[in-house]
Length: 198
Image (tube, rainbow, N blue to C red; front, side, top):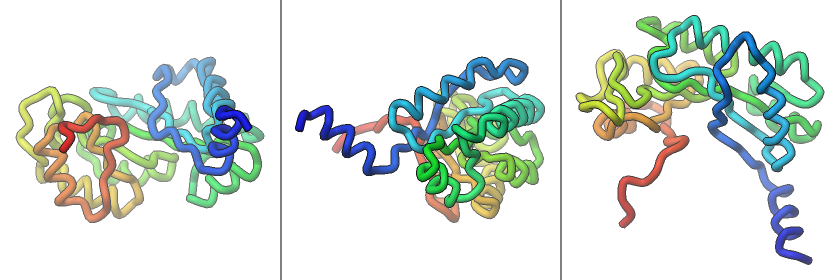
């Protein structure tokens, strides 16, 4: 058995998850979405697609979610929107790619925590507190980090309540440490590097 054949057999036996796929954020042009096939062809079972970041506001995020959901539902023979964890197993068994969404930064909710539940219902499975710059939730990695705000603390608790995982990639060091301590559920660093190796 060749090394390549052994590696392919191993990949086929495990769940392969791409936790952060970035595509053009153009809600009126879905021509890029067939690129999701590359994830399937590469052996991925699950992909989380970014629907907005940074200064993008509520409307931009909702437009992207609406466009992507419509496209996925129109191509349901190849893709399955993740609504529950069971959808991942069902997609894999049916030869589909399971797709969920992620959001990079609290600007997606403005000052309205109740949007988190809506985003969860639309398929968002994880969300950053801050994308590089400070916002009302806390500090970004490119600004002076004043730490997790009172709003950020409430946001973490609401995210845990509705089932959105908090991500501290792009987040400032102090805010990330405080989020780890504050969050009632584990946080992730979905696309980050280690600060140091010991």
